[in-house]
Amino acid sequence: MSEDKTKKKKKRGDRRDGRLVREADSMHKFAGFLLPNRCDNEAVMSELVDMSAVEEFVKKKNADSPDFKYTMFHVICAAVAKVLYDRPKMNYFYAGNRLYERNEISFSFVVKRQFNDMSSEALAIIKLDKDSDVSSLEQIYGKVKKFVTHVRSENKTDGTTDIISVLVKSPRPIMKFIISMLNFLEARDWLPNDLVEFDPYHSSVFISNTGSIKLSAQYHHLTNWGTNSFFILVGEKHLHPFYDENGNITMKNALELGLTIDERIADGTYFAKSIRLLRKLLQNPELLELPLQTEIEID
Image (cartoon, rainbow, N blue to C red; front, side):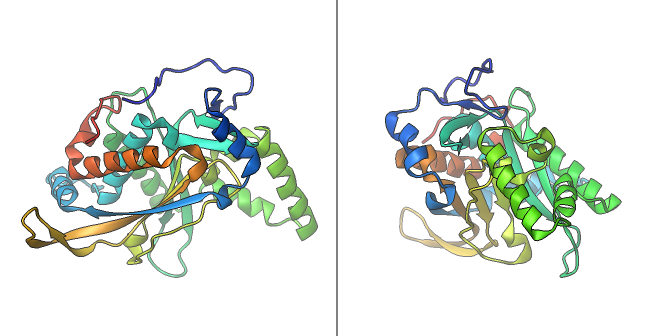
């Protein structure tokens, strides 16, 4: 099972959004100074997922024809949330050369108001309640439904877009100065709460459903700005051959997950075990209906 997840009192050196990992070994403490840029420390992985179980699960969830349907995206997000809960190092981040454990599990993603070239986009940031008895799936579903309905029906912008719209009106020299000051403040955890609250790069995971626009992609870079250590691309669903134990081939619907992770936050063994848990959850999506705190054994 994962490390103790009880809330800890904030101590000197902690950030508003994370606890300083004081128990980190010397290598991880040194890495923040030797390799300070997140973009220089990207570990890129690709996971091909058999979606048969997820498709059947989603079909059952939509049997009563809800107004806002469950999708594979909801299931994938819920599975990732469970991985972050059970495998807390996947929710670590570096800031100001030091390693932190994020206090919350949060997701950022883009919502397209309409699928055409001229339609604007909105950035969604959703946060899960780690202490809730509500499953990760139902939390994700409810929060995504609320945001998408709000943005598409009321045609309102998100907080991130509002802030950027103000900043870009500044002259170029002033804009450069503002950005340098923001980086200075970010490293010291002095950014205003309003900026952090609406910044998608201060989330646990930035996830992009490229498959929804018929695009197959396996890699997206991280950014040195913010605290985001984990980017996921959800590829397009397609038929793929799978072999059984007797060597027989069966064509099944599958998709690729492109994972980009800050390699400084954990080691390869930890990443591999985390991916195995993700795979198990997507092969057994009914586990995502259990409370987030439910222990799941990793095969």
